[in-house]
Amino acid sequence: MSTLTKIDPQTVAAGLKSGKFHLIDIREADEFAREHIGGAVSIPLSQVEQADVKIEAGRTAVFHCKSGMRTEANCARLASRINGDALLLDGGLDAWKKAGLPVRDNAKAPLPMNRQVQITAGTLVLAGVLIGTFIHPAGYALSGFIGAGLIFAGASGWCGMANVLAAMPWNRTA
Image 1 (tube, helix red, strand yellow):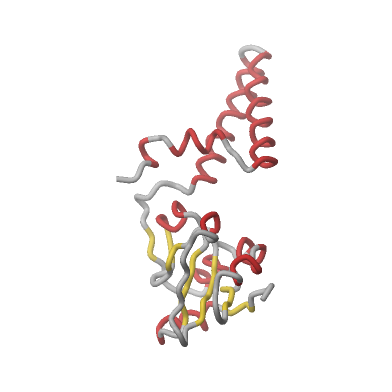
Image 2 (cartoon, one colour):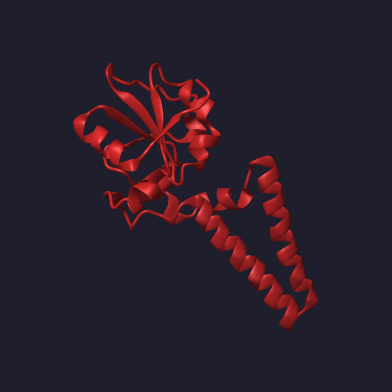
C-alpha cells in the first residue's frame, strides 16, 4: 500500500467512539504534549521505524498530523508499519478542530520546538538588523549568521539552535 485513503473528522470521531479506529498521531512528542485528540497514541514520525505498532483485529489504523501534509508525504512509510487497513485523517488536527471536535490541550507544555526556533531566529535576525542600522554595520553579521544556520538546518536536517533550545530548563521533562 503506497497511499492512505482520506477520511473526514466526523467519521473518525464516530469510529473512535465505536472502537473501530485506532488513532495514531505522528507529530513529534512536544507537539502531542501541547495538544492532541483524546484516544490518540503518539508515534512520532521520527521514530516510526522503531515503533512496535500493534493494531487489534477488527480495528483500522488512522494516521494524522497537524494539517495532513506530513502524513500524506509519508503514506508509504506509515502504511508499511501496519498489517491491515490504514487511513489518513483528512486535514489532520486542524480539520478536527475546525469540525468542532474536542481536543486535549496543555497550555503549560512548552511550545513545539519548530515554533521556538522560529521565534528565536526571528528575534536574532531582527536584533542584527537593528544593531546594524542604529549602532554599527557589523550587526548585520548576526542576521547573516542566523540565515546561514537556517539554510544549513534545512539542507542537513540538523539544527544547532533546536539542540540548544531543547536543553533549556522549560523544555526538560520531569
